[in-house]
Structure formats: C-alpha cells, structure tokens
Length: 441
Image (cartoon, rainbow, N blue to C red):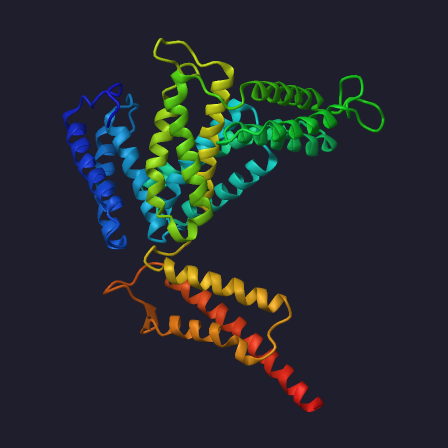
C-alpha cells in the first residue's frame, strides 16, 4: 500500500500471499474504474473466490497465532472493502460479503461519535437496525472465514453502540427532547460554518434558540415538576455550554480557515459536497464502488492525526476551531457514506435503469390514487404504455443484458407487478366512475 510506516511481512509465505492479493486488488480497481460496461456477477465472484483462497492459506500459516499487523493485512482489508462494495453494485446486498463495508463505516462512525461525545437517539437507532439486519445475513450464511470475520466485526460495532446508548439512558425522559434539540442545533451551526457563503444571521437565529433553552433552567439546572434536578442534567448543561461557546467561536471566525490547514479543509469540503450531491441523485448516478475512493481519502486524513489532532508543517497542532470544523466534515462525510450504503437497492446496476423507472412509475401511480384517481381510463394510457414497454423487454420472463441475467430479477419483477396492480385498480375505479356517470345521464 502507500503507507511506508506499515512493514511488509517477514514470512516468505506471507510475502507470496501479499503479491497475489495486490494483483487481485489491482484487478478490482480496474474493474471499478471501467465505466464502459456493467459490472457482471461472474467477474466479481472470480475475484472473490481468489481472495477467499488466499485467506485460507493465510489462516493455515498463522494458525490462530497473534501477529503484528503488516502490509498484507492492509491489502487484504482493501480487497474485502472493494469486494463488499462490488457485491452491493451487483445487487447481492443480502449476502455476507456486502456487510463488510458497512461494518467498517459503522465502526468509524461510532468511534467519532464517542470522541465528539455528541450523538442522538436517531443516530444509534439506525445503526442498531442495520446491525440487526447484518446479523441475520451472517447467521444464515454458510460458515467460512469471511463469516467468522464479519461476526467479530458486528460484535465490535454492537459493543461500541451499547456504550453510547448507556450514556443516553442516563438522561431523564423530560430531558431527552432538549438534548436532541441541542445536538441538532450544534450540527446546524457546524453546517453553517462550512458553507461557501457564511451567514451570521443564520447562526444568530440558532443562538437565540440556545438562549430559549437556557431560560428553562432553574438555578442553573434542568428540574422536574417537583423541583428536583433531573437525572442527566449535568450532561445536558455541559452540551448547552458547548453549543453557546461554539456559536461564539463560529460567529467570530466566520468560516475562515488558517492557511496551513486550508489544503486538508478544501479536500474535506470537496468530499462532503460530492457525497451530498450523490445522496440526492443516488438512484441514477451512484455505483457503490465509487464510495471506496471517498473512504480511502477520509481514512487517510482521519488517520493522519497525532493525539487526535492535525499538525501543520511546523508540527504545531490545529487550534480548537480548526480541529472541530474538520472533524465535523469527516463525521458528516462518513454519515453520507453510511446512508448511501444502507440505501443500496438489491438490484444489479445493469437493471437499475429499469428499476428506477418502475420506482418513479409506482410513486406517480400512488400519487394519482391518493389524490382521488383519474377521471377516465384514457388518462392512464401513458402509464399503461410505459408498463407494457418495460414488460416487453423480458425474454422468457427475465430481463437480459446481452447474454447475462443480472442479479435482482425478483425485485424488478415484483415492482413491475405492483405497478400493474396499481394501474389495474385505477382503471377499474375509472371504468366504474364512467359507468355511473353514464347511467345518471
């Protein structure tokens, strides 16, 4: 890899495995970059099987012995990460390899949430739900080295989440909405701080909300109806102080980053903005393997910290304002990557254009139904024609791309059937309406 600090393996047998894994990783990267054709399942599975064979050899060599991490481990991690994203790209989202990339991202997120000591119940609920789904996938998969590895990674993520949850559980029920609001305000201030055009008025409005919350305190504490100090009041008071201090700093600095840290900041802004755009256009423009490059950049910047902070060319640590601003951008970007991963459809990218068209058709038909249906059958002609044109694309009941039968046939067929059913219900309702109007005449 491009990290000289990580030593190469000392064992000659491991060195041989490293060379083979580097070749596999290079093939995965070439496959990722090739936009001239769709990614085929068979191309991915060949490389997955080759990786699995090298993992079996590695396990035999190490035989459960604890060894110092070397370059081989890093290259293997890259192979697993790429393969995981490829499994998402080809629509095999409910298979164990697809879970690897998600566990990496969840672990990054939980580490950052713990470091910042800033998270909401919604953050944890989403990741808990995802881990439950990944646990089901792993429990039903054939037991192999990858499954064992994933089970350990899921358990590690679950432990991190449980530790975070314990902090929230200490808060009394009346305090939880206040805490959630403070988390939201602090994140909104940070968002304003990293916008292209800084708006003092927006931050002032958020600060006035903080003042309103501050006024709810009695003698400096949040109290219950009986006048007693609520459990967790100290933590919420501390967060309120942090919010007020951060709003003051942001209003003073107005989004200006010192020159020594500007290059890193600009990269993080670019990553955040690109991921933000992808989150809006995901259904039409995302190839999950694209997330690998974002992750690599973020990991590299995140891991370049010394004792939790970045250093300038003279070895001086970044001041609090710079540190918090860049950590916010890293956390936000990992959050986008997580959201994009969990939104990955169980359909190969080869079928995504059809799947997305059907998703749009379904939304339109539901909207028509919820707004009272159509006045006549004729109004349904455009929907019917589109559905029949998609249905006619099937060959022997399957959607083909050349000679290939891409993954996700069941999902696309099910969605097509739902659209036909909605269209039929609207047509029946329209015919009845026309008959009733005719009989009244």
